[in-house]
Image 1 (cartoon, rainbow, N blue to C red):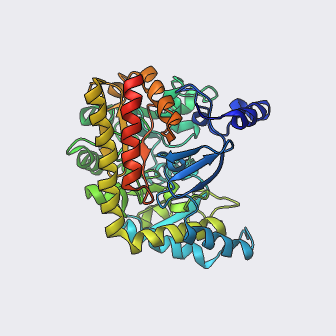
Image 2 (cartoon, protein in one colour):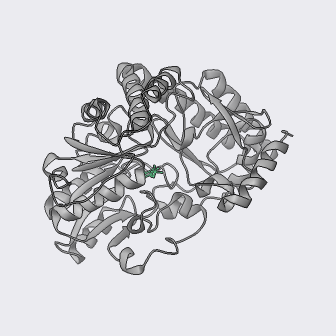
Image 3 (tube, rainbow, N blue to C red):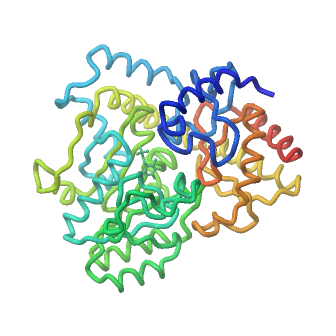
Length: 430
Ligand SMILES: *Cc1c(COP(=O)(O)O)cnc(C)c1O
């Protein structure tokens, strides 16, 4: 057994001061059981906890760490920026520089604004979409997570699914009322909603590849179908690429699937591990924002110089090496995702493996997982046993059945081999 004494002591102390001992609920490990290791440092594909245990990291800070931990060019960029001060509340050259890289990656984005989180990005995109269309309703999909703002915390997958809370306490019904939550991968449900709420739906927001109910790919023709429904009804199509942006391709899911959304939100990778989000899109839409237009949105730390520096170093590196990076991510991720799935099959454990690029989920179910209700057929107790066994072997998977795992450029073939072997013994024991 691992030594967990110091993590346990830190956890006990944190629990007295922070609700659940955490600043974000899924970190508490309630969905898988066992105690969360307290992290001391990371390097490349590895994390070390307070007791000196080493883990192979397959959650990558929930997405941002595509270049691995403490990647020297990113660390140096942050250090150089910090020496010139950590915040100004005034414009810097770096904002337009990173904006130009974002626009190059996602040409559907003509103008954008930086925020400090993905939550702010999606919340602000919705406000702009409502102002631009003069409509109140939005369509989202069950199991898609778009951050924790009131109107988007309706059937929101991920942490919400993990804890079985239908939305959240503290969200007035009147606010949730304007959010229509529909099943993912079901175009007929979207057509029906648009007939029932004629000229009242401002936008459809979705994860073009879902990560927050576990990894679920869009069915063939689904994204095209949503694009055409929006065109017919004068609604905006918003791709929430906070997770998929710069991960599924340099240009995210919109590049991978060849769909042009009206608006896009980004986060995670774009900030290189510092707090950062983006909302952007067509210039005529983005000109609704103050100071040009009537939509108010602001942030003391938005476009923060450290976040811009980390984002520039990260996105710049991805751009320079895009061919090699995305090809390698594809093969290494396939090796680990398929390798573990094959071990499950050999052990007689029912698993449905969903993967798109370098995000994937092993669902403990034999049912194909195409939406939230099929994701919920998973045996979460079996996933919890698997998670604990893997952690014991030094492999840290996302601590919930309803989260996607991620891989970065620092994961080696040897890491994959070690993971497949850990899974073989985990399946033998659980
Ligand atoms: C993580 C995530 C968010 C929220 O971003 P935060 O930075 O955690 O506020 C929004 N949408 C998607 C798709 C995400 O994965």
